[in-house]
Length: 472
Ligand code: LRH
Image 1 (cartoon, protein in one colour):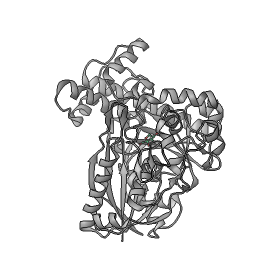
Image 2 (cartoon, rainbow, N blue to C red):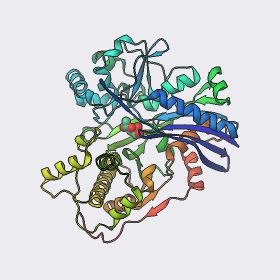
Image 3 (cartoon, helix red, strand yellow):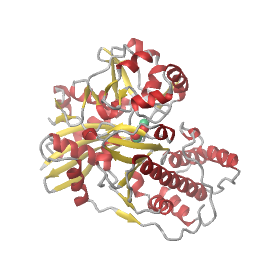
Image 4 (cartoon, helix red, strand yellow):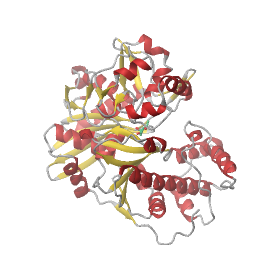
């Protein structure tokens, strides 16, 4: 039995999860869960990476109290980075929801046309993609090293500096066809002197923990690379047949798409907002970012701030399910929903523009958000199938959103296809499975790794209801 620690950092929370892996068995054990609390300072919104690192060390120490841990690997959200001078972090990394990047988009697009950018990097347009952040980052000139967030944390743990390939693919600076840094593009956007680390694929052994870290946490695991972009690990953790399935990795974001062998960089794919992110084993994650449960959580945060009392999510979802009134379906991908802020007011504004009455009660707001998310998921699955040629017959929902039965049911209804929900911890599972293969506890391709998930987790099935009460 191998014991492997997955460090999985999401935008709102992080966890250290132990995977217990044997050839015929895999179990997950959450040993440490912690909040991820971004901090606003005068220059903008930042990640508190020091607090996250401390939590990771606490988690590893806790794991070490009861187990000999064989391996550890880090994954996190994409696109964000730290700048270093010597061993010093130049500043707290910016949060991708910080609004400073608008000028970066203009700057880069004036130098390289969006259509050409897409043919080179294959990425959907997101205003926070790393290249746009770097274009407005004055501190770049002061740095002699640059690391994406999971690579920064891995460097602190292990002492070596790399750019893991799946996460690097989200920077906009990697050639989608060759999976190498696009030096010509870097020169053209004025980033030719950016101190880029070498790319490394998931499944690489990096050595052990730094001696002082090992001392601190009391374990001596191997450190390896996995899909350090959380969505790359989540897609490994989807128990699907990639030839006939789509997935929704549903948490803060709803990442909706299919897995391909080769990128699709047609003009239709660009205009439909599809990205070609690098997957594990050279696969392509052909997907679109739907705004996700962020819209609901930020709505709840607004109510809690205003009223000073906590909202019970279970009660809210039960009330949303009981709503019989017609609620508006709005475009959750509206860029106004991206930054933190007063979501109910923004939803009301969008509804007013569409000429439909805004929801009035909290239950109606929640139902309206879930109907709108389900509609966006269904629409995006249809486009993914059409643009990629995959004949989608089932949709897997993984991540925290897979626990939301109403959302899964509404997605099945709106799409007219079955939804298979779970596993919830697909990202940690994907992380653990790739570690297990790297360290020799498992072998085989992604299909055989996924077959192990299928054997250990039974998904919850939602069939489309023949007659939905109403198309709201
Ligand atoms: C999800 C995610 C997503 C990115 C966003 C920045 O956590 O990694 O895939 O687009 O965060």
